[in-house]
Structures are given as structure tokens and as C-alpha cells.
Image (cartoon, rainbow, N blue to C red; front, side, top):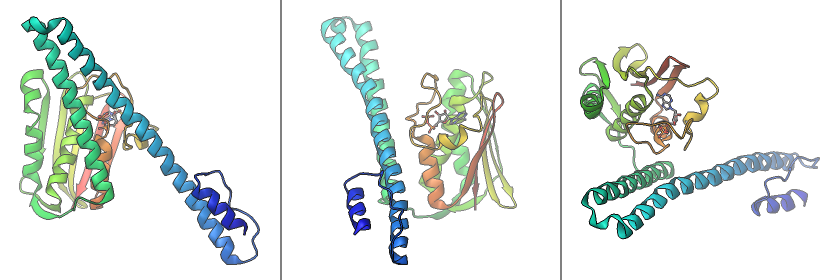
Amino acid sequence: GEVTAKAKELARGNYDIDFNGNYYYSEVTELSDALNHARIEISKADQMQKELIANVSHDFKTPLTMIKAYASMIQEISGDDPDKRKKHTQVIIDESDRLAMLVNDLLDLSRMQSGIVGFECAVFNLSEDVYSVAKRFDYLVETQGYQIEIDVEEDMYTLANRERVAQVLYNLIGNAVNYTGEDKKIFVRLKRRQEGLRFEVQDTGKGISAEEIPTIWERYYRSSETHKRPVRGSGLGLSIVKNILEKHNFDFGVFSEVGKGSVFYVTFP
Ligand code: ADP
């Protein structure tokens, strides 16, 4: 039959097939609708996969090129000069770190998406974790003039996967540090509200336009490649945040005003 022939085409990777048509049995019409829907979904997933591979390859290539160039340079030129050698080996170390971080983030994401990592939840003191994660950025406060204002209500407990929540907090605060304005100010808050425990991190940076907001949660989305950031990012930070919070079913989002800054929030139970 026609539907079967078309389904076979679809299986061969032709996503342009149209399953609509006038079929005799209502069941066949239903089946054709379902196949049409499948066709659209599969082709979207396929497109995303291709884009991801292109992006990942690109992100691997740059550090690899650097590592090779600097290794050659040491071999041919700077090997005997301790100062230059130190500078050049440092580039290799930094670029290797970048690669390692990228691989880690990719593995994390794929493990979460395939459901390999469990999401064991427990009750823990969220106030303590917000505080201690924010404190991990102290080296930037001490060395680069950042000001992280912490306003956390004490002893607020939540039920969640503690480790993953720490990762969410770290990624969101890290982004605020990366994208905040000239004043280098960041505000971290945790407050009890009617709907739950409201975590917020606010920066004074350039903000995110309304059109851009839906895209920032996607893997590998980056508004500007050239942005210089004090905390390293793989371009996967927010998609990891989204993944974790969706798994928990927690409410989260961002309010942002271009030129004024952004507030990322999460509501914990
Ligand atoms: P990365 O920061 O490594 O590029 P993320 O997934 O953490 O990757 O963020 C995706 C993009 O969202 C960033 O490249 C940036 O364009 C935007 N973004 C995230 N946080 C902020 C923020 N606080 N202010 C402005 N833009 C942001």
C-alpha cells in the first residue's frame, strides 16, 4: 500500500515524504497522521544532531590546533628558553583543560539524557549549598574585583538531587560572573516565598533580548564567541541547567532587560 511504501522511504532517511492523503480506512488515516508527526520529529532531531556534531567538532579543533602549534614551537624554538617554554607549555595546559571540560560536559549531558545517572533525591540544607557554591567564586572577588552580594535566608531545606543542584547553582552564578557589567556586581539570593524557595542570581550585564531568551537554553548556543569570560564555559552550561531542572520538575527561568542585566531564578520545593 501507499502508506507502507512511504513509511519505508521515511526509514531510509527521506524526511520530505508527505503522509497526508485520502485513504479508505480511518485507521490508515490515523496511521498516516502519526507517521507524519514522526517524520517531523525525527527530522528535527536529525538536524539537531548534525548541528551538534558540527559545533562539537569546531570546539575541538581550535584547542587541538593550538596544542599542536605550541608543541611544535617548543620543539623547534623555545625548548631551551625557560621563560618562553613556560609560557608555551602553559597554553598547552590551558587548552587541554578546555578540552577536558568540554568532554566532561558532553558526557554529563548524554548520561543525563540517556537516564544512566540516577536522580536520587534527598532532603538537604539548600541555604548552606547556595552559600558554599557562591563562596567558590571568592578567588575572583579577591583577585579581580568582583563583588558577590549574598542574601540567603538560613536553614531552608529542600528535596532534590544535591550534587546536580550544586551544578545548577554553579553554572548560573558562573554565568552571572561572566556576563555581568563593568561594576562587576553579582547578587545571589535565596528567599522563602509562597510557591517555594526562590533562588535568584542577578547580574548588571548587557542582558538578553526577548528573541534570544528561548535559544540560550539550547546546547551550544552562544550569543558572542568573542566575549571574554573570567570563568570558563563550554557553551553547554545552561542546557545542563535546563536538563537537571526539568528532570526535577522545578520551575525556572530568566527575566532580562537589555542594557540592565538578567535575573535567573529557580523555585525549589
Ligand atoms: P557559555 O556561557 O559557556 O557560552 P551557557 O550555556 O552557560 O554557555 O550560556 C549560553 C549563552 O547564554 C551564553 O553564551 C550567553 O550568550 C547567554 N547567557 C547566559 N547567561 C547570561 C547572563 N547572565 N547574561 C547574559 N547572557 C547570558
